[in-house]
Length: 140
Image (cartoon, rainbow, N blue to C red; front, side):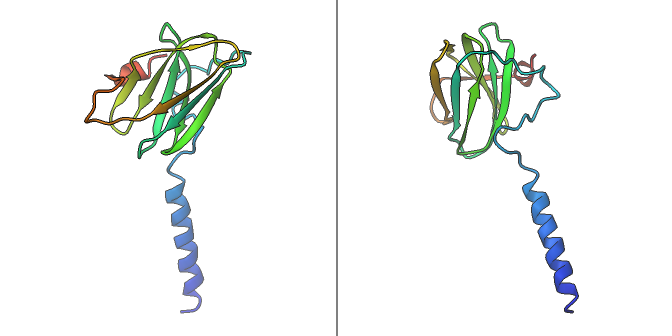
C-alpha cells in the first residue's frame, strides 16, 4: 500500500498538469495556422485590450481595409498590449465562446499614441458590437 501512494500522487499530478495545459495563456497565437504572419511596423504605437468577460477570447486586429494585422488569445480578466501596429484606422474583432464579434467603430492609431480598449459584452443591452461570421473572422 505504501508503494501505491507515490504512484497515485504522480498520476494525479500529471493529470492536473494535463488539464491545466489545455487552456492557452494570454499572448498565445492560437490560430497562427489560419492567419498570415503578423504585420509589425516600426511605430511607437500601443493598444491595450482588456478582457472583462467571464471567459477567454481571441482578439483579431484589422486595418482600415479589414486586412489582417495581428491576433492574440486573452484569458478572462486579463489584458494584452499590442505594439508595432501600423498607423491606420483599426477594427477590433473578437471570438467569444460561441460568437464572433466586431466593434462597430474604428480606432485611429497614430505614431506614439496609446489606446485602451475594454471588451465587455452584455447580451441584454444593445452594444457597440455586431455579430460576424467565422469566415469574416478568419479572413486574411
